[in-house]
Length: 179
Image (cartoon, rainbow, N blue to C red; front, top):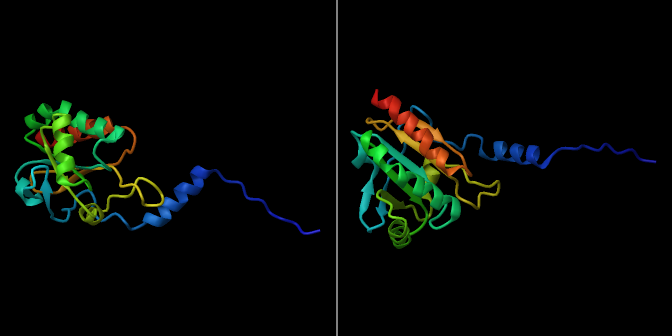
């Protein structure tokens, strides 16, 4: 009679292994580096370049899509703390693959006082190395960057489900940059 060896592992271990193997070397933007430049259309159809923010801190947050529950919660958290960002002299920029008209409706509906940029085709997301939210790469990831006045990355924060944590973590870093 043949003998078989049975290996038991949890799906979490399996998924983590796949993610590590699939995205090893994927990240291109690191803390202390200058991210790739971009020019994208904002919610009003105007071109906005990363270089426009040089000389002031900027928070760039990538999110999966307008009007989804967690993304809306995140955008509203940035909105609700917007005065704190202004006190630090920081600009807030949200980026997703939605088109400018979707961003315009989203910004209007939730009274978002900051810029939303359209990265149709997710070229900037890929250039910055934002990992997808799922192991199959079908859902765009959620990742936040804080750049200092010189455009150098001071924080990379990734938390898919706790949207408010993105705001808390960025404010902590902006506080250290101010002092």
